[in-house]
Image 1 (cartoon, one colour):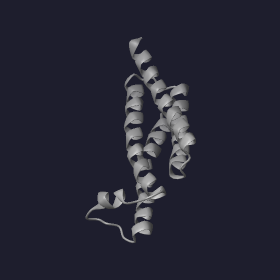
Image 2 (cartoon, one colour):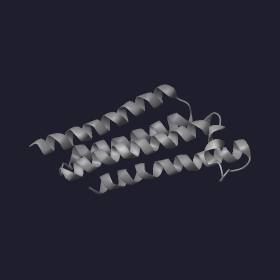
Image 3 (cartoon, one colour):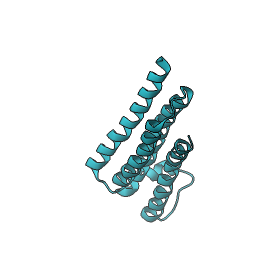
Image 4 (tube, one colour):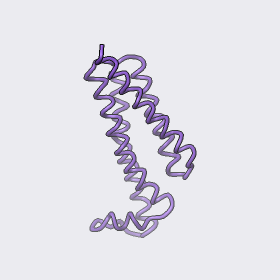
Length: 133
């Protein structure tokens, strides 16, 4: 269970890491961090700066999906080697996705997104089949 909690914690911090990277690009591309109109400023970013903004949004989406999958595992008490392996795999694959998104490696990003999505679907499947017994 501790490993799964650590995985959830890692995923919970990813949007903030992406936000920090986005802040760096806001400063480097515009010379200032606009606290009054941050979304307007973010819309003006280009390249890796723009991708960091989209990455942050995707990290929030992944956090929600993974959290609900883990909740299902916890509620059904389906914690086992497979759920731990899937949780660790999800985190590692999302790290690859993170780097691929920032560096504009579209195929790797697409593949890692699909694999991380599959990990969550598998976690849901485990929770559902455990609850059905």
